[in-house]
Image (cartoon, rainbow, N blue to C red; front, side):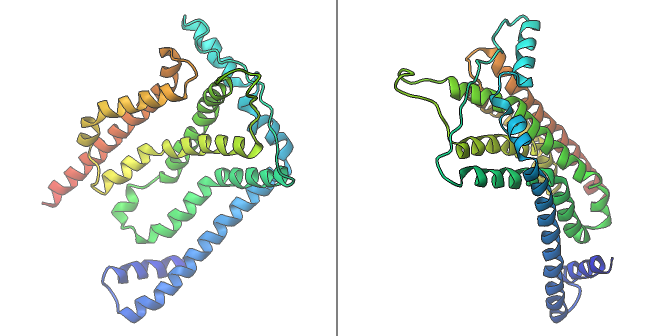
Length: 293
């Protein structure tokens, strides 16, 4: 509490209340507080990483290699959905029989470290957001704090929702398409990706989708800052839809509309949610401005 009070005093002096010497001394204290936030965040990532490293065999076989297995839940669910919707086998992805190779002596061990590090980072994501929030909180006014209730929950929710979408939807489509894509004959080319290449791909897909699903929160923040308006999002909605359709067409393994819609619809809903959030924030800003005027 004392440390938080000191940081509140620091931010007040930065806003013009207090002498320069006192502000300089408080700035050192401020950096010290930041250091401890970083240390606690790193400890959380390390602890989760160690837990993952201890259970690396099960995690590698059932989670990391999950999207490459024929009995993966997404393959069954999509195929069943396609038949129920009368689309036949359009959503049934071609089977994958991927064999991973390791080309360096330390490849397996270093890959285990990478899995532990990235897994620890994702598992500790809510705590990392909470530490950032604790550091920024003293700089906010009471009115600003009122509008940020539950922000950690919603940031974590959209991140894990996006990570799940990337893992259960984008990863199967991507790996199925890339594995079954051919050039020439099978006698000439043999598909054997390296372990590091596969890990980079699944991390990029999962973590990237998690970050992409933060679009509603980014819209909320930019709208609160007055840098984004719902009118802007509505004006460029048609261009955004075209971009989302192109993205869906690239990552789906077949050119039929059904498989593309399965990927594109969640992205469109995410964009529309961003429009709604921006509109609500903009309306509150306009109301507050009128009351102040």
